[in-house]
Picture (cartoon, rainbow, N blue to C red):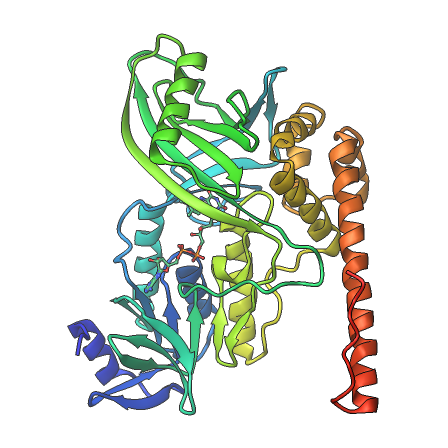
Length: 440
Ligand SMILES: Cc1cc2nc3c(=O)[nH]c(=O)nc-3n(C[C@H](O)[C@H](O)[C@H](O)COP(=O)(O)OP(=O)(O)OC[C@H]3O[C@@H](n4cnc5c(N)ncnc54)[C@H](O)[C@@H]3O)c2cc1C
């Protein structure tokens, strides 16, 4: 049995809560919630549950890592920082956008662009959660998740750990095909934390996107976030279906530094790599009736930007409230249909005409104040603001995508109609009748 002492203590001392009870290798496991995956979504939801639940609730957070490293850097724009300010590693009040045509600099008031380093955030969240005495952390790799006749469970070393509810943010679930055309690509990146020998950066201005790099048929840009005149995070980011090699990231980074900071010597102190799914496919909210998916694997990531941190904060409050009230949870942060539609159009362009991304983003950022774009990307804009945004966008790729999607939707509708007719005929005339073949 691979239970840690902390876990044994927790299980044996667990107060009488409504949790499920089962005997596994002679240890009684009794808990209300198992949160499988104690990353961003897992810990945020756990804290929301602790704060909203008036009854004592036992929560077991299981992660394969002890979560004490800087495995992620989260950046987001917000009017108000959602945590104590000491958790903000840095923030910028101005952002810039770069393309061959020009560099534009903007104040982003009423927003600020914040950065959180995960190591500090994990430490803060753990301290908050441990204070409550309702939460226990366990470091274990989960092999599977499921639900049988007894209860939902997580499988660890061939043993089932049971709870009334399992909340999953770690075992991958397959996104489902939706009735709308769906697209999938990766936002993948490598960030270099550099320190230069001379004063090089303007620390009050972060660069959100600098497209002055070879596009190679995708959308490729650099993201430069300076902390002072000599220290910055320089990140090479690509939206594409295929990933690239380590050498390719490094080559593009060196080229960018040589072209835009000529003669500047620097050292790389740290690197960060990652990939984020960008898709409008639908992820199932329920893995099974008592196993709920949250975080990235529930489709919370904004498909066209890859941003999710703030959406996870908002979503966790809604989910925790519903869990406490015993209500079912259907949607993640509700995306209004028109934003889902915009995302779908842009995703299609980025996937099928990737090289056009530079032109689209350049038109977007050079013709609008960045704050308007940020409001739009936060899905808080009004139709009038959206009309102003679309006015200056290159029309051809969007019309092409629109025509393509209208055709795909029509095709799907016709297919369904023929399928229903065929099913009805089959029902009326018995199973031996020949099945109708579709004209596509
Ligand atoms: C490198 C990176 C940088 C990002 N930067 C930003 C950003 O700047 N802004 C933004 O808004 N979004 C960003 N995102 C997107 C999103 O906000 C993050 O991915 C966020 O961490 C998602 O939360 P999550 O809980 O779904 O996943 P995670 O935070 O990754 O949590 C999942 C947890 O599951 C654990 N786990 C996985 N498999 C198992 C297993 N078998 N057994 C036990 N535990 C397991 C992992 O160790 C992990 O702790 C970034 C994503 C990445 C990958």
